[in-house]
Image (cartoon, rainbow, N blue to C red; front, side, top):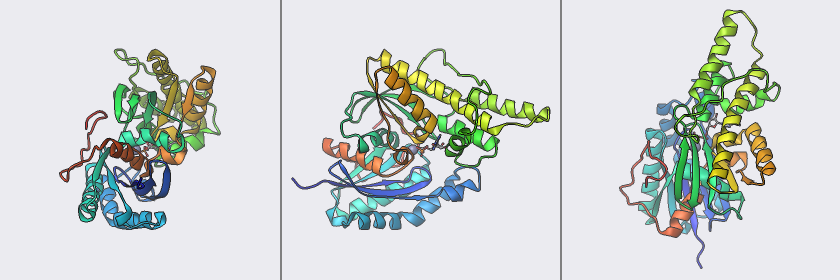
Length: 339
Ligand code: KG4
Ligand code: ZN
């Protein structure tokens, strides 16, 4: 059988990424141009700057992905692209570019859901992992507990009511002067702190025990900082980072493992940028082992945005024959399950 080469493009936020994968098993290239330095000056992603940088870099990143894979556009079987959710201007660059590429080369086009891409990051390195399982997707824009019933078939059983977990990391990091992106900075800073030093709230949402809420925790951290400032007390930022991280971890681990048990599964996976957090990964590893559950996680580099995960999701869509029309549009608020 002829090999299936998927070229995937990801531009939903601040990474311009392109990857080529073979037969849903092998990564031929994985190119990421990160805009983090540009945005960190502003303390967060500036959508206008992200779109402009994507359009500047997309051709080079794609050419590099083809070169590194040792192929040309003629060898590609289909073009996959993230079409939502994300920043609309950023998504539009990737979607327009992918459409033009597919149109010019006469290739099928596959619109990929960004969160589905994050979930599929687990399949990159764990060939034995098969649905069904429960997956916690925690990123800068999303916190979802999902039952992965089959490839491309999802049931969202919990979501955040306010801030995403990554957003809370970014806001708290900003408040203690750790810069952007906050997640990796807090992760590193917390290593020198005591997670039991300050007690922050672990919020429960009344009408859905699998939903999350992080805005109260964020406010508690800001109140703690303001209180200390007013009393002229010095803040131990390492203790604060560690205590905040522990509060997030406790809630994510508690809700997730309850869902795995309640829904009768024993396989659990994590995904999304926050899944790169070392303390969260260690806690899940530990708790899953203690409760006899199989725990999967992508390597940290596949937790944050990349095009390999989009290619993987695109490959499963390809196998099902789910192609997009040339009228594919960017959908910034696309929800999991909407197709
Ligand atoms: O998945 P991602 O790259 O982009 C979105 O789809 O949102 O996630 C980015 C988020 C940011 O909020 C970043 O601070 C967070 O993931 N993040 C982390 C870590 N690495 C990235 N949060 C906690 N610990 C980390 N090590
Ligand atoms: Zn993402």
